[in-house]
Amino acid sequence: MKDVRKILLPMVSTSNGEAALIRGYNFARRFGAHLAVLHVRPDGRDIAPLAGEGLSGAMVEDLMRTAEHESSRHAHEVRALFERFVAAHPDIEVISPHSVFPWDKPSISFNIINGAESEIVPSHARLSDFTLVPHPDSGAEASSSETLHAVLFDSGRPVVIAPRTPPKGMIKRVCIGWNGTAESSSALRGALAWAQTAEAVRVLHCEDYQRRGPKARDVIDYLSFHGIKADSVDFPPVDRDVGKGLLAACHDFDADMLAMGAYSHSRLRQLILGGVTRYILEHADLTVLMSR
Image (tube, rainbow, N blue to C red):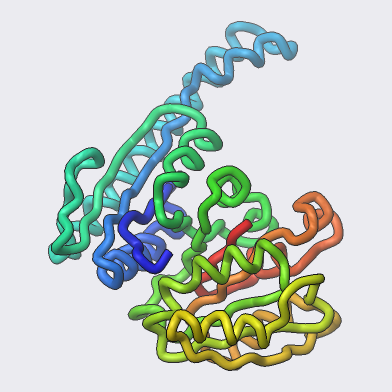
């Protein structure tokens, strides 16, 4: 992850798209990388099997026409947003999705592929250094975002969640949420790309968050092997909520990014009972890197 060259940005719609494009643009400039913007256009014919679920042929055809209209509208809106963005940022080179990467400067491309988002996005994410996703709109939608979870669970690569509002400047202050798990170790590895050039790095840990595994002091030693100086803070839960305490500790540090493992407990348990991952997804107002 220290050598970032390709960033995938899947955009289902224009919702929070500008903020994600700005964050992706900042990353491309920082790493001299390629930002691959991808829109997956659903196939309305996928609705056809509903004919076997009690719907008449006429009803299915009407649903297919509606789905095709919505799909076309979203594709047009996403492309228009992309074109406005690159027109306003002439310093980033626009290339075709399959052309040779220009090593001397950051670049950006736009591609539309027809098919199932849950299959296409993780497939492309597997050959990207990380995937940047626009923040889901709000509330419970954040913990059920199909794109985000498809990448988390089926790509083997980190996912970075852009904030809802357009960010200002580069990532300068990085927090690493640590609990000793394999998931937090994967996020730590992903965060090295930013931590190596950050102004300040802090490892956040909490007794109520810790699982069996290495402690925060061991993370400090590991980071030192990469030339990264960091401190650690033992943060308390807020209102008995570890996720709330973790986010408060990030705010106290004035962090631009939080890196953390996702779903140390099962996703189903977190959806039902709540958890740190779910709280961060639904309430974070900074850039978040998550990894499984």
